[in-house]
Image (tube, rainbow, N blue to C red; front, side, top):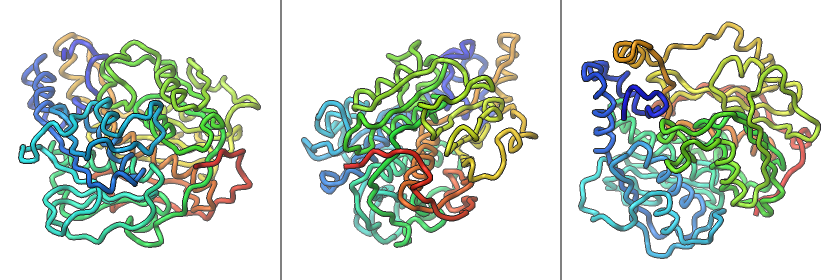
Amino acid sequence: MSILQKESISRLAVAFLELDPSLAELGDKALDSIKDRLSSYTVAIFCNEEIENSASQQAALLTAINVGKRCYKGGVFVFLKEEVKCLLNWPIRASLNEIAEELGARVNSGNEKNVYTAEILIGSAKLDNDKWLLQVNDWNAGIIPPGIKHSTLTGAQDFPLGGILGGALSIGLTFLKIAGFDHSIGSEAVGLSLWRPDLNWDDPQSIGPKPESFPNKVWILGLGHLGQAYTWALGLLPLRNPKDLFVKIQDDDRIEEGNYDSGMLSEKINEGEYKTRVCASWLESRGILTAIVERKYDEKYHRQNTDPEILLVGVDKLEARKSLKIEEFKLVLDCGLGAGLNFDMIRFNIFPNLKTSPKKFWENAKEIESTPVLKNLSQKLIGCGYTVGIASAFTGCVSACLIISEILRSYHQGIKLDHHYMSIRELSSSNLSLIGDYRTETFCGSTPMK
């Protein structure tokens, strides 16, 4: 990994440089040292037999693999019963074991006595569990550290969204702890309910209803680690007729090597391809209809009558946010992520629930120089300092679950938020505003779930 090539720099690896500025003393070997460190991290994921009948647990496993391989570079090891039938929307009806291997995991290839950097158990466990325990249902996910006693999470496990959330959280929390970003993680059980994020994740009232429908049209704007996570989650939804869902995808960038560690759908073989086409391929292989737009969204770009009325925003520039035209949509869901070492912070705003315009809301906001150590080092080495945004796949994936759950609640008379601010490392300190309940008749057409 050469620091001279901006497009090849891992968006996650830069976080280590900012965390430990002394690494800059290594000069152009700094990121090579960080790469070696990431390659020493391994994660083992253990699955009980109950995963055979749980779409939520299966989604947790596949998400944890896809997210985990981008930060645990030493390998993702999975221990799973042979020939488990996949319950998710996957184009080739392979076994869950084969899909796990396809995503990059080493299935049943290690010894349980091996030493791994992190060990995660999906499902139920004994009280003396020595692994990080991940419990999920349709809407909820809880992470219970080793040695912490906690009651079992109840609720149906037929819907993937709670599992997607749990898979991303389990990787994010364990990685942030072992990598030294927050040593306080692991002292208590934490989690989140996507149905009632204002309640504790294990509160019986936080267990939502069976999801029955979803909009028949959505628009994804921006396909970085946020937009790719939206796409990953949408592709796993159990739609009765996937072709009834139309997704408009907009971005003008191509995939670079540096995107691999942060983008859920950015694989090394995709380098140089337009992000729109990679994301469209993911959805279309699952039967979902798409249209792509390979130009920027700006003040001159307007929604047409046949376009989706629900906009999922994943842009990383303030100017693009300020140009959002909420009057042209029924729901605009915008997510911004923390800068610098706060890269696991999520700032989710919902318009028109938030009674102001995007331009007014971000009127005084300014772009932050998020990687000063990288800028100084690149200035020293090549005479032209630059920065990149720190990003992780697990933060993007958790954010996607928040956004998609807001859409689902709008179709199931759930609570209505105008914002939700949180960080993965401090799940118990969310800042959100509940402003009422949704009424489904205020939105567009729907497509039924299985």
